[in-house]
Image 1 (cartoon, one colour):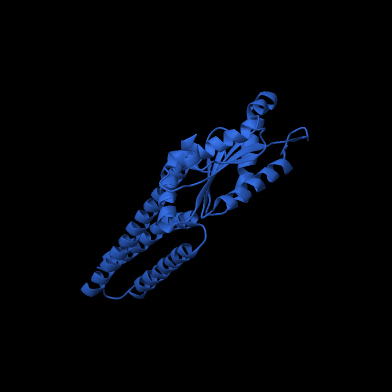
Image 2 (image 1 turned 90 degrees about the vertical axis):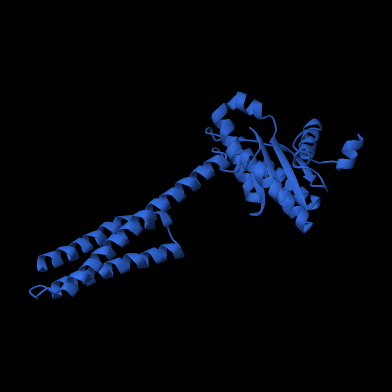
Length: 277
């Protein structure tokens, strides 16, 4: 009977040891934080159980094994199996969550710049418009389009054009607030949805962006700096205005900035004036 007893104790220890790689995998995925600290405590608890299993088995070596000892050993074996199953399921769940989050990020973000894409905008903007109307807070948009971008691609090549896109994206991100939503709207066009921002505030943001673009060129491989400018259209969400009309007015203001000389910002006309014209 003692051989059966010791075999169950060793098997239980083996199951506990088999759970540790899954715990390590979860810890690597979690990085740092409170949740990681809790899993660290679980790993230490498993190590303490291993010591307890070993001490219990050693204490019974040479002693007569009773039916009660076998029951305890069976419980310890079941406990080891339970810990292993929970650890493996937790590892699988953690990996699935990370994979799903990665897929969602890839679907919703532009791969070149890392900012949100049009697919994300379609759902998020409706939410922000609803929230703005419920709370009676302003919502504004800035449409930013690079000037003469085709000339940059034709003159310097598409790799430089891509670098210009990344440069402008990073510059815009440095100026917007955490609560604002930045989207790569088209090839060289960006959209900023400024929450809780009236027209005066979003216009100030547009002015800052124009200054930053003029002041920071793109460094080329030959040591030269490539100047980059943009045209900007600004619009304030109006009552009962749809998402499409809201963005259309910002886009119209953008093209007005293009028509009147580029490297500037134009403010969208109120919807009533657009309808009247």
